[in-house]
Length: 289
Image 1: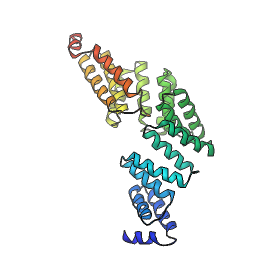
Image 2: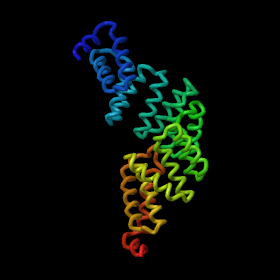
Image 3: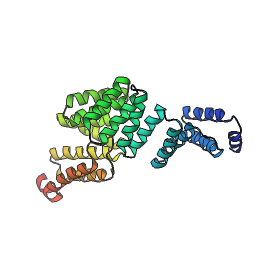
C-alpha cells in the first residue's frame, strides 16, 4: 500500500489512480476503490471520483451524513455532472431532505430532461412530502425515458393501490416484478391488492414472504398489520392482537417517511393503536368463544 501512496504522490499519477479506482468499481470492489481514493486524497490529489467513491463506501457503512459531505464536495468539483446530481438527490432522500433532493433533481433535469434517474428521485421526494399526484407524474416520466425501470413501475403500482385502483395496481406491480422479481414494493402492492380483492390465502402467503425477506420497518409494519386484518376476519382475535402490536412496534422504528411507507409512521401508529383499543386480549378471547 505504501507503494500506491508513493505513486499517487508523483506527478502525472492521477490518471493511473483513476483507472485503478474505475476497475475496482467495475469489479464490484467498492471497499478497494474507496481505499484507493483515500490514498489519492491523502497524497494531495483531488478529483470528484475520489469523493464520490469514498462517499458511496461511507453510505454502505451507514454513515449517511458523512457520505453526503463527500458527495457535495464531488458536486463542487463537477457541478454539471448529472450522475453526481442524481446521486446527491438519492442521498438527500435517504436522509429525509426531500425539498433539497428536488432541487438537485431540477439541476440535473435542466441539463438532461430525459434523465430517468432524476425523475425517479424527484418522485421519491414528492412521496416523502405526501404529494402523490406530483410523485406519480415523475414516475411516469421515469418509465417514459427508461421503460425497464422496475422501481418506478413499483411506485406507480403502489400509488394506484393507495388510490383504490386495485386492477391498475396489480397490473403495474406484476410488470415491475417481471422486470425485477425481488422488488419488495411491488410484492407488497400485490399483497395489498389481494387483501382488497378478498384473495386472503394469496395475501397471507405474500405477506409471510415479505416478513421473511426484509427488515425494513415500514414494509414489516404493513405486512404485520395485513396479517392482523386477516386474523381478525378469521375470528382469530388473539393472533390479530399480537400482529397489530408487532405492527405498531415496527412502525415506531420508522423515524421518517420512507419511500416504501404506506403511511407516515405516526399515522400508521395511530391506525394500529385504534385497532388495539377495540381489540384488547380480554375482549378478543371472549369474542373467540
